[in-house]
Length: 425
Image 1: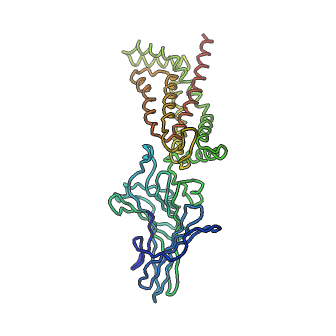
Image 2 (image 1 turned 90 degrees about the vertical axis):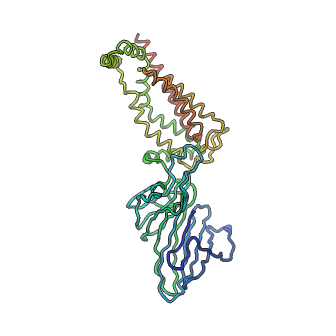
Image 3 (image 1 turned 90 degrees about the horizontal axis):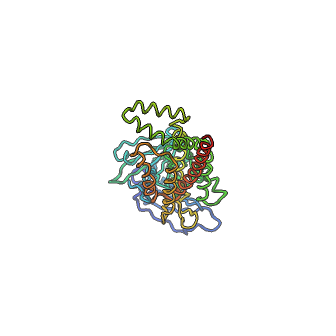
């Protein structure tokens, strides 16, 4: 709930009953805005009017006050603009719990600050309290409501628990002193709509940061930029995801190739490794020495398959966050039965394909010498398939494409190494 009011004796607040002034309340053809005026009961010679200004094709609403001093004494006040919500996290899917829900503040001094509602509940919320710039918002998966004051007026930020499982976060703004017979005006824009980044960037500095990419924003932001650029050409977010995955996979080809070559070599020497383990099972030091000698002889780096993958992990996690947090995926169709990339595959086709590609990939990898570890690795495709049944289909599509490309690359490299070894023998 977006709530506003004036602070001062007899002044209207968000619980005051206003009277709607007569008029037509339709945005007429050829006009770009519509003004709605609500009159509060006059008290102590102060007449306050709340003004809503709606703009064509915009999620932004200007909310202000016109304060007329009809008394014989100067008058000053403050205006508050707050957002109130409960502490429940949206339950659209099992993955949404990872996205941030709650208040956020941006100032030049503190930059972007997210505040957990649990900290507000305990009175331990830490954020910039006063500044001459900045905005305040309430963030929820795909959507945001935010007050974005203009100018350099001193403003006070606040957050508090107002009832059981109910919280308010807002801004207090000063109202210029009003002399007798004079009128003062104050207004603050409210954005309430989807987290469409092209629009958020134009509203206020840093407002696009409400899109929750987690701790990898520095990587996720350029990935989203590339995804959006591809979408401009193909016109479909599903195909844009596929092409982006191909581009990222191509960029990491040298690293992936090094990893797969190492794993392919490890697979070839697995029988020798198992023999050493059986032969020296009672002498672990000797077994390790023989293993290292085997690695040296075969020119294998036991960490060669891991390090290239570790370098790529932050990029693929960032891409995960982009696909999870981008509202552009909401209601975006791909092909055939996929009508919304932000919800699960209704027939679970993509998760099953993903599980199958994971299983193939496991078969191409060297079998771990530890039997328990081998069983765990073989169970991974089943576990991931079950998890991904409820994942947004856009995320599953990304994993499917990535797995298919990995299988193709790994199969080709394994075949080349096996062929080279046969020729050498």
